[in-house]
Length: 336
Ligand code: NAD
Ligand code: UFG
Image (cartoon, rainbow, N blue to C red; front, side):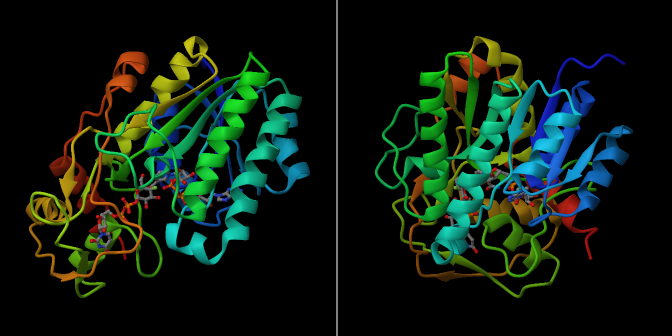
């Protein structure tokens, strides 16, 4: 079957990357996946092949290994890149700033140098709502002032800046900066999803471990925020909706001027307790929780103005919180 475009997917074995690979293959894109498996395993890619019935080139490769990375460009015809690879744990980044700056920044610069050398000028980059910092009011809009509170977030902001500078200097680059809000959920097959080792930092993985009895109790960080029930409000988005956002961005890259930022969220805020209760309904389990002090660095509310992505990419999220919880449960209940 004819493929429209060959896309290099960095970090393609990861949580969002693997879901996006499925969407790309199902829409007849050709894909080449590279990952060093520092936060994933080849099993996710085997599941992608099983779900789609398609195979594709896979490179176990570190972005920091320039020569190894170059081999991928030598051996494949690449039309565009979706760049997921990176370290992403906020708390860990505070303790290991050099590791985060080196991996995320040097890795991205290696990628950009190779793209330039091989004439690949189309890029979709995984940015984050974390770049809106602590001082904006919701809903967050793409043109608000940006700031960060931890090294992880700073790598995202610095990469956005690098990409904007690059697009200013070289007008033939086309770059979409996708600012994800809070991705949760899993593919409906139940074969892939997010299941971090150890004690999770993020809300949904924590809830899932409580629901399956691996952890005794969720700590809800703060019940005195100025929100309807006092707990923190976020814009949770189904990972499969996020995946389709990448396809829309790829389709529209040619009409994008320089580097353009897009919020990928639902535009709707849900509190921690909303998520707990939705998960209980979806799973038929009880999620034990207790209130705990606020987590340093957290903001009260974070949700997106999604009008730019709708207007310019023709994309909007379709799945609601109940569906996100249903699919998270469908995935986790089969995990050991
Ligand atoms: P993930 O950790 O599951 O996926 C990232 C992948 O990159 C992993 O498979 C990891 O092994 C790989 N990787 C890391 N460093 C690498 C290197 N040097 N060379 C090759 N591969 C490397 O994370 P995810 O949740 O799928 O996130 C994907 C991207 O989206 C990341 O850049 C992340 O910062 C960003 N993002 C995630 C969220 C979220 O809440 N999940 C929110 C906003 C932005
Ligand atoms: N929360 C709890 N208990 C927990 C974990 C989280 O109450 O055990 C609360 C948090 O205080 C917050 C909400 O649940 O109110 C969501 O927290 P997450 O850690 O799941 O997500 P964050 O919004 O803090 O951050 C996530 C990613 C960041 C990314 C950001 C914006 O971890 O990398 O979304 O996209 F930058």
